[in-house]
Length: 315
Image (cartoon, rainbow, N blue to C red; front, side, top):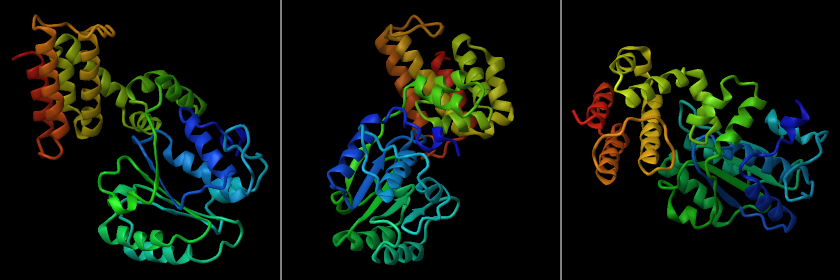
């Protein structure tokens, strides 16, 4: 592994990295941390870098969590072979209560290699009630020198009793040029185009790359710039229609771009109607509201796209 990847600066989150470094230096490590923010902006990367620094015993300097590139902690964490480092992941199957209880028992024991134990729990807002209750029992009397990092996009489903015992850190979306820089460092083509439509998320940019997202976005943009029904038909008829996540996010991006044009912030080439700015913005907000509710209301995907098109052009 290259030194660039081992000690790579986490773009866009320098202040957070500084805060975590100061916590280690001052020995004020909370037993529970909640890293919340949009998908794919670097929460897990910062959590792992924090874990490396904490478990290595290296005292941070220069307001960062960087540690020597030849430190063996890099391999131990990246390969998940460090005996005092644990990750609970949620993939297709949810984390079970038995997994959680087993982990809670492990972290009650004395660390074996480091002074600390670190636990990272991904998608923490999707845990069930029994798992939250199991965690609360631990947090009421947290084990010495144990840091639990819960990663989530929002804290809405996490019990207040748990939230009140945690140090919450919010991660903002990255700037387009930061996303582009990360993608270029990863050797990804179309970095500039992907960054412009990724909503500040490296993770989403990679998803777009893997699912033909640039072509889908451009087809939709052409549709709403020039009332191009051929581009609309491509979205309705092709395999692109099967990936409603990209269609939905692309529509939201396009309508926010249109609102910016209406407000004179930028010119994206949309043909504006004769409606007043206030009336036009109200119409767009209504479209955005329906798109955001489409999953909950279980609306037909093609119907949502057709509704957005017809409403946008006042059919």
